[in-house]
Length: 350
Image 1 (cartoon, rainbow, N blue to C red):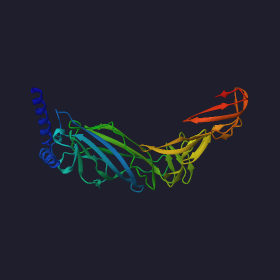
Image 2 (cartoon, helix red, strand yellow; image 1 turned 30 degrees about the vertical axis):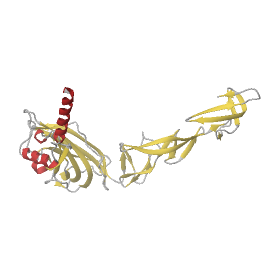
Image 3 (cartoon, rainbow, N blue to C red; image 1 turned 135 degrees about the horizontal axis):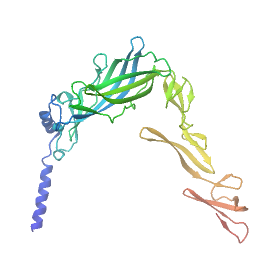
Image 4 (cartoon, rainbow, N blue to C red; image 1 turned 90 degrees about the horizontal axis):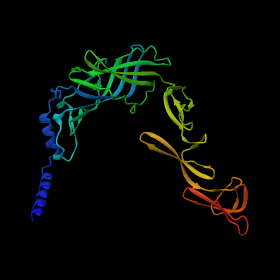
């Protein structure tokens, strides 16, 4: 009877916890009641660590006459504010979207921009249950850059300087582990991106990212450090020779693709035979990468002359230096076996 009481009590407690789940509206109200856009979330006198990632969209203009460059970019900025966290036991969700005007922001700015960058995205932040905040503004930035080499093969190197506008390293530090993201880079019609790199430096007690963008005129194309003329069909050294590209006014287009087997190319979807085994060249995707595979389609038998035969048919076959006239083969899975009858009363299997 005592054990039954314990079970009943536990069940009631579990049921009661489900009954106290809070709605999304209630959690939002609680968070906004605690949030303070003017209060930097420093904990135990440690500076706020801000993760900063720069994602280039396009090079819009590069005016040689004025030495001005205009870029489109995304900033992915993350930090932790414990005052915005909530208990997961009270909710069925782990994240919320809130207006940024109610939340403290690190105010990462472009120090060398000409005027205030244009912001083209909604001013929203994503808040997670542990207090992690992610802010992703979309910018158009115009800045000065020495463009005298932009028409040469080495291109012009332009530098953007990012950092907090109102905080020094005692209050805020940038995470240097992040790298420039080029997955959304569209590629302009006039300029080809050669390289994009960044480094973190402390300048006048400020934590600053220096982003260097190296660009050259379009018309030609650059792939893995190699330059190709406009209109040319090319393969990139070090890559499969079956991956052919076409340079189209600065854009790299796929010209042909396929599977490379023994130095020969087989187009995607085509079948080919090697040692009487039929393969099909197939294309699949692993993340954002294309993968080309020679998939086994059918296995045939091979006679003494290298001619392919269907399993079950009779043909000549050579084994251990001897020729057999009456031979057959069978196929099981990816394996084939041969059986021969050299003359009455004798039997050979291989």
